[in-house]
Amino acid sequence: MSVTFEEIKNNKAIQTYITRADESLSALGYTEHSFPHVMRVCETAVYIMRTLSYDEHEIELVKIAGYMHDIGNLVNRVDHSQSGAVMAFRILDKLGMEADDIAKIVSTIGNHDEGTGVPINAMAAALILADKSDVRRSRVRNTDISAFDIHDRVNYSVRSSKLIIDDERKNIVLTLEIDPNFSSVMDYFEIFLNRMILCRKAAEKLGLRFKLVINGQQLI
Image 1 (tube, helix red, strand yellow):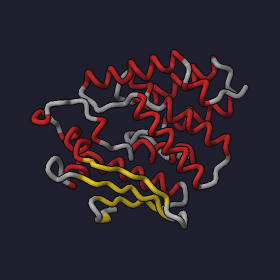
Image 2 (image 1 turned 180 degrees about the horizontal axis):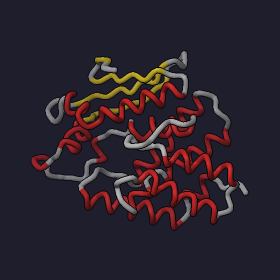
Image 3 (image 1 turned 45 degrees about the vertical axis):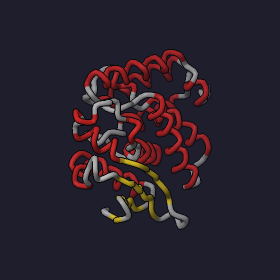
Image 4 (image 1 turned 60 degrees about the vertical axis):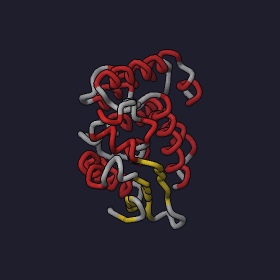
């Protein structure tokens, strides 16, 4: 049985898991991981795979994986990609999705985080790049600038963020404009270096080179 992204997006149980997972992260002081984040991840993953001419069925699957990728935070932030993969398996199996499609989505979700994730296939690589490139001011929950931690400062400092595959389909470039009044480039690398290394590996899986440009300077 084929299960569509629209069915997943409109599933009340999945919506509840996303909401509650984000509430758990809010209690821990993390940035926003709710519907704005998951939808942005969906859109970026679709852009990557469509630009690289992957088939529409895989694009639909990566969209579902993007929407569900952070539900494991409901269990615990630690190993949330694995928890989320197990949760996704149960949900999708119950909905009657075909085993091969479930396998692709579960392995994609289970490999999206920099702790243990590996870009094992194109879907996993696209999800990694989409997830790790979502850095923006609107993800910061803390309204007291004087109480910002380094994650708040870095996200709040980002005026704009774009992930673009060049016309030759050789490079995928994350371009950030950072306000130095809130965060330095070194702050960004202090908390995101492992993510950028994973992005480089993900880009290589897709036959691309990953580049990071901050305030007009190429750093990777």
